[in-house]
Length: 381
Image (tube, rainbow, N blue to C red; front, side, top):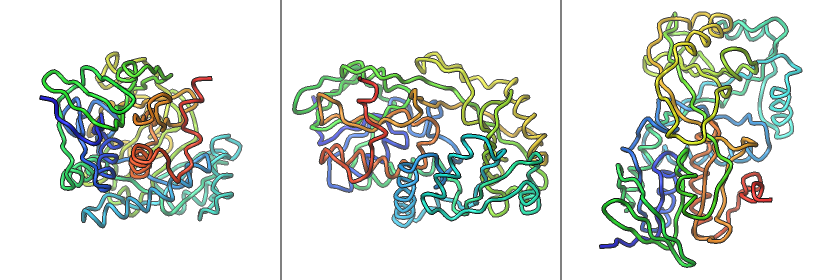
């Protein structure tokens, strides 16, 4: 027998979980469907930490960060959980590097509080780092990290408390659309709703094909490493800032790192630099030993005291658009279907706000926030 809901959200990663939460807060009867187990490791949302910061490379992202931070604080108050850990953050680069210059320019124009440090000032203040002579740094005090899996579970628990039905380990087999609603089919059941929000991460295009859309999304498998640092006390959140080095070498593009949280080791990875595939079915989740050796080159040179035992490593997925901006928009022919995808490795810190935007688009067809960067139309001209 078909079950009826006001809204169906496909994908219970951080974006879908946040969307279900905000829809449920608005009094909507929500079905949240997840093809794998809740908090699975195959996508983009699982893990110990994700960076959150104000220092982005476009004013729209900075304005979004301002709103997202406040929503994270509100979620912490509502759940009683510590989800955001403030560490401060460093962007380190030679001054002429374009991505560094862009962040510095955006921070200045947005009136963000920051410090501009020379290489010697970085070493004196944060002796864990060994920048090259002539490198400079942008330091922002409110950068930190979000406890990623805890955030996903906080959203889903609150959504369920507010009446959301969560069903995991249930892949969608097909979607039927009409002018007034949708029907979603699984191997065992069918579900109808007036509204559909698609937050399927790297699996987005597989579902969009049934909705008459094909977006230029690709999947970039990234690897994370967690390294033992000595002394450990120097690499905890209160002493070790989130860092980004705006450089590119064998180890990849823009290496970054996050403090040791609870003995898991210092997280080190790169923002980009891996080959992409067209579908998650093509992803090899086996960690690369060559990547470990390459990233150790970076650690030995720039954060040498973190070059200890590899405590764990795994692969996760970035879903990429050609311009590396998000997709947050309604279906061009079916406005009751809302789509979010292509978060390019930096979407997690905005997920509170994205969830709220998606809920608003589904319910009201509009949002107060500027989503002009994220329109589907930029790929359909």
